[in-house]
Figure (tube, rainbow, N blue to C red):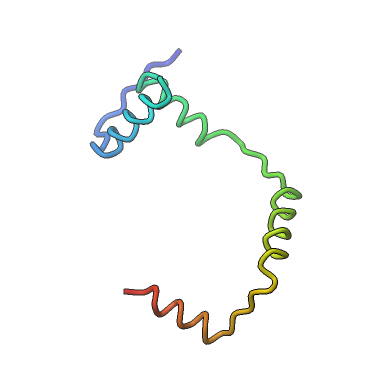
Length: 80
């Protein structure tokens, strides 16, 4: 097994890792390994499932019709 030292981890990131490790009852080292595995693993997307869910949402919201003016107003209100 290879040993690797990570230097200059930002304090905020370290605190997130530490908290996550505590929640998951792991050492910080094991938490880092799990995070790396998740980041690098190939996650297959079930296209049919995603499309099916999108169709369900479209059906549930089909009665809501927004005009271009309403959409523009929401955009303006959402900006500082």
